[in-house]
Length: 223
View 1 (cartoon, rainbow, N blue to C red):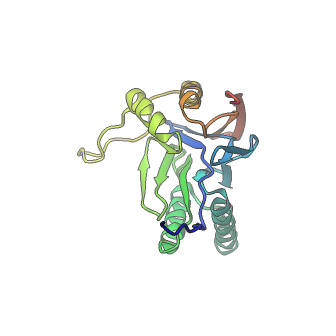
View 2 (view 1 turned 45 degrees about the vertical axis):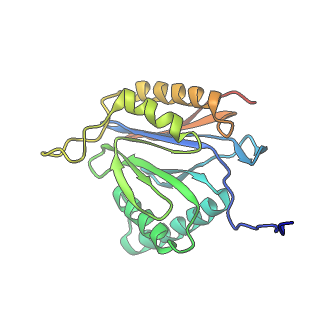
């Protein structure tokens, strides 16, 4: 008879999906509010979106304890930056800081999969997508989390960006207007929640534009 052993892991995957879309003068970041472990729902009201600066927002799926630790680390580093430079970090600077912070922990990583969205120094929308150890890319749209395998093909079909290998370099921002991008995000989440058991309950949508940050919500299926 084989010896059975209880395995303990420092990680868990709490599921959930995140999406970000950048436009000419806005960025929309969205995530569902369900937090699960295995087949259990821990809460239906958990926000996966964190405001890092006035024009920069991060959405994270994965292990939410690690996400919380990562958010605290970024907030502390941003506070130091503000004291030293007397201004807030730009979104591209925060993107580099997030990459460095994740890479620094690459041998015992933060088990978090992040999308960072906001406005760059010219007021144009930008989205950065990450893996768990800090490799990142600037894109026009991105999806992370348990529903990303369902959401990404949908977004590719609707918004396919030009290849980053094209010369001269093409702009990554999507041609959609702000209201169209919000409608598209509502559609992809409604679709993903039908097939992914870890995505559901409600979506939180954060819109970043020249006027600031605003939030809206939409109910999803609860089962």
